[in-house]
Image (tube, rainbow, N blue to C red; front, side, top):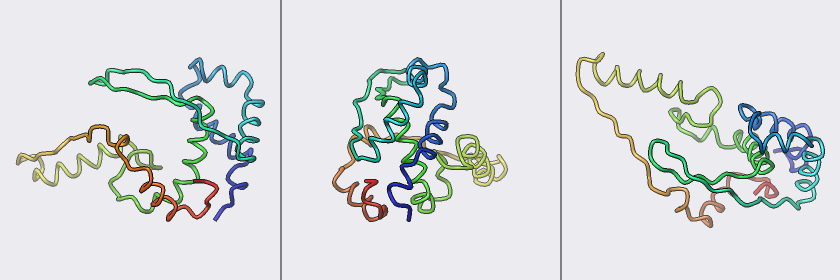
Length: 165
């Protein structure tokens, strides 16, 4: 298992920055961060290594997608840390997901999920000769309702590097 200092390296932080930046180059907050990129990344690296990093607050706004959604957006530096953690945690958790989980997984994604749905639809409908049904649902405020004590207990069982939690 990687130790904390191997996870929190300049190379991994720059990879996290590069992953985060994809498709966001024109956003003003990303451009401001990039203006002093080296200073910002080394400052973040030092805070992480010295265990002085604190996640900032979220900016809040609404989007119509197609229904009204309340969005909470983390700062650029916090989202870089999210990418850094994702790259570490992905290796620990991916094997435990069911095959047909497509969100935020390598070699999966929306298009592959739709292709897989087509396979199931064709099979269940007997090559589109019979009706078939699907259920689309959303659990209202699911993530906000998670018991964090239980979640942290489950995470500690899976993540052996306690500095990461």
